[in-house]
Image (cartoon, rainbow, N blue to C red):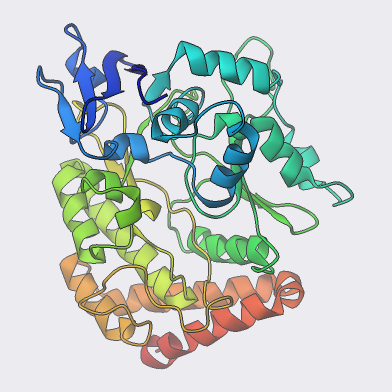
Length: 399
């Protein structure tokens, strides 16, 4: 695939093409590309090529990682070379997160021959899965060539069966599965996301399968008519590769919010960012890295960007007891030091009465754990780790 030119377009029109040069990757806008077909807030339409030694961040954003990448290699290695350009063509071909689509006739043929057409999956049937068959493995096998979502955790982007036959648009589902080394991971994320939801932090609709093995979330990058919205994670907005997702700091995310969010959305986005980071500290989420925060917008020239809903919140200390924060918080990554760091971060975000916001998060956490006591009993390692992480915050901010 490295020698092929991939065509790039957005809902606003054809954008251009991406290809590999002698020493680097090029993206070139078409001669008649309209301004609103820009593929990134960092890459406005211009005549000169955008060149990088590695793939441009906006194209790296959805590349598969971890489990899904390994499964793709197993599926395709005997027939094609699995390189970044092939992964880009696959991840950008059908339903990538965001509004940037990538197409290639060769890859379209590959998908056609290796992935039979599907009418989509029924959410109720997925939720009712009883575990007698390995549903997640079946879904990965069926939809792996639609790999339009990144992340190390096993996950797959699945089209939901359309309720009405007159539309081809679907509100896709992101389905996540824990591996054996991460017991209770689906319950873990369900509990933490429930705290976020009850605390008033914007989150996508999410569900837990009845056998508690799958965490399902609706995608959040579509408008009410299921049209694609622009989405860029913070690594992309900082011009960083996916491997640099643990660099920088939470303060740099706040800076990006101020730089790119519309004036009318800055205050609410900074408050949401503060609450999300504080919640990650409270529940012991050591994986709140740059790719787990992002912005949503309609198109790059409308200047209406806002912080995307919270996603990927889960306790990590249940599996890595000595885990630390994913990013620097006021000069430190220690969960212990985060009690002081979060107050400095509040000043960075210009948050009024941060102690009250933290107390509200703690009260919500207690309420959720009490309400979901059955889940806590089924994943005692998770519930214990969350409570242990929250104890320090209770002592400091419990009121």
